[in-house]
Length: 69
Ligand code: FES
Image (cartoon, rainbow, N blue to C red):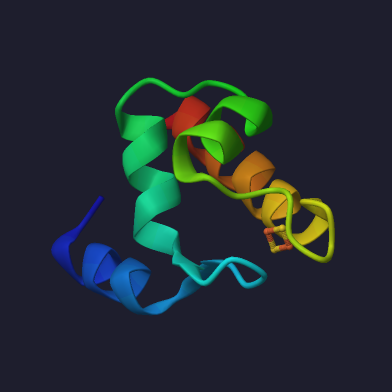
């Protein structure tokens, strides 16, 4: 990931319900999380008011992108 994208990921929300930034999700994937559930567990997200719907969709997109890079 390019430096500018990493900087933006530090600012963008990853899980709105839990207040976790996007960079944490990316770091979990970089550290080996391979499924939505693994990323959610590593980040302590997915059990907010939306029950993981919003961040789950975001994680699925990130995992799909990671599999092509
Ligand atoms: S956005 Fe993550 S639990 Fe709602």
